[in-house]
Length: 315
Ligand code: GDD
Image (cartoon, rainbow, N blue to C red; front, side, top):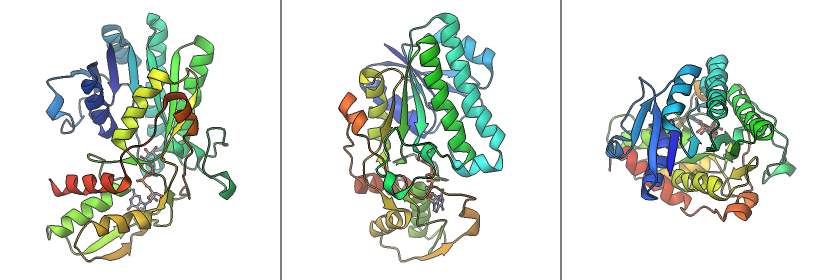
């Protein structure tokens, strides 16, 4: 069994690779010339790295012709919401074109590859108070170019399943975090600030954006187990929420992190961290995913945040 992980050097990609190796699966993964390798340095000997620019159809076609994987975990994406406002077209192009090129290569070579598409709870966007916990049949009301790119990925996956019978499973993952989370994302950003304050590298002031948003956080290690189960037991063509079913405000998340440290800090709102429109609440129902695959989250949030803080402490 051979799996291809797109974006293998990224946060989720590196955890996916570790999970697959532990399962005894042969792992290949796409990287780009400018990819940073620190997240996969410890497993580089055990995986095959293939240079591939997903936005380039020829590059994807050549890679797929060589690799012909049984499974694809399509994790490569521009995944930071604020970046999508700075350059909407880059996010749309990057996220949508890469996926089309993968699907077209599967079609061209007549492969029976099973494909997991990493969609997002951001697709739900504007959620009404009576719509939580959010189920898969909730309307999609995206509030950022990033969210629109994920809606496009989601519906393209559905369309390629319907039109050509490609075995596609769409996962709409709610926020996820853990060791190696990029420093722009809120959990890592706050954990890194705290770790630096602990070391005396910065004054005891935490810079924050909108603390009132509510998010449902799953540990990345539970998420990659979910992606595996999605292809093992999920129904082709379906979409599934991956979420814990409980949420907290960003302020509560910050307080949890602070409770794991001895530092005393001031909290300062930074206008540059506020968004043109922010999703108020994302709280997911993953009953459908549980029913089809047996998945449920196993790692408590406190453990995830402890591991994240220790990651930034360098432990
Ligand atoms: N990044 C960041 N930095 N966010 C902050 C900050 C800050 O200093 N302060 C408050 N926030 C708020 C944001 O406004 C948002 O409401 C929430 O914290 C989470 O922000 P992010 O961690 O940047 O994640 P996201 O919710 O925008 O998107 C993440 O989750 C999606 C799934 O719902 C990303 O991982 C996406 O790729 C993923 O699809």
